[in-house]
Length: 206
Figure 1 (cartoon, rainbow, N blue to C red):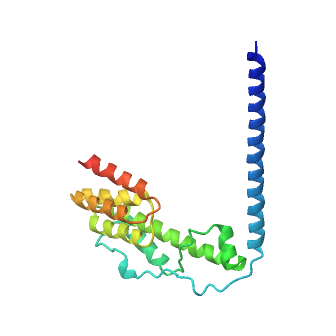
Figure 2: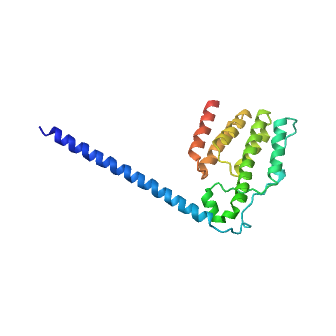
Figure 3: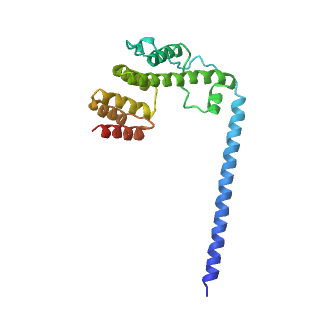
């Protein structure tokens, strides 16, 4: 006889709880939006600051692997990298647009965005060079290009697996195992996914 009233009470309690959670989520979303626009307004009024101390990336042309080849793709990416290293480059990937304006002033935003884009293009060009060398069977140069990309900050899983496949083409699976150990010993933000991908590549070879 008490089943219906108890059910109704539970149903009402559930509805009230659901309404409360929805309101809480909406309030949190509104607060986050208000906080964002407040920071954005502050960022857009931040005065231009001195950026002469920024650690610009300086890459020597001698660091670029240059194989003896007439392969058009390889030569194209070598020339592209040579042009990129002449431009100012800096890694600002840890900054959001708002953070960047707050840190260095809105007057520097466009210039610093260009520096960061140059850096990103440099890493992409290194990866493309490594892949072009791999396809042209220029495996030592492909290894150097991948290693250079890692040295300057590449964090792409595809770059690590690309290097692993180069080692396997060179019949050097032990170097893939060493690469896994390098990643395990480091503090790479995507360490777990990289290790898993490298192990899968090694397993397919075995």
